[in-house]
Amino acid sequence: MTQKELGNVIGAAPSMVNVYIKELEEQNYLNRDTYPLKQ
Image 1 (cartoon, one colour):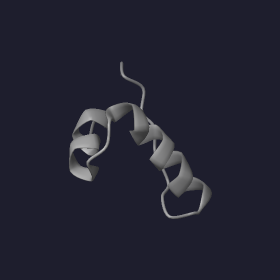
Image 2 (cartoon, one colour; image 1 turned 30 degrees about the vertical axis):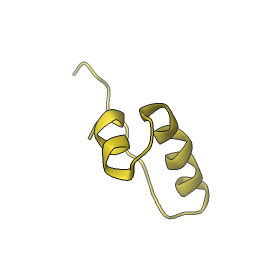
Image 3 (tube, rainbow, N blue to C red; image 1 turned 120 degrees about the vertical axis):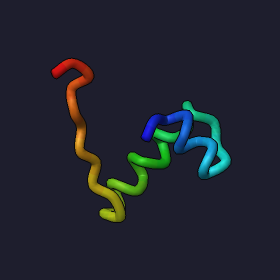
Image 4 (tube, rainbow, N blue to C red; image 1 turned 60 degrees about the horizontal axis):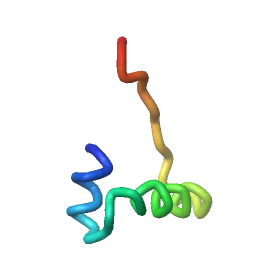
């Protein structure tokens, strides 16, 4: 899911999505897996 898609779902600007994700990670509500863009 992209930042833009997630922003549309939660009703926030895409630029705010990482802020919300970081807060959720700090509160142990979310674990994020990252993948390289090129494989």
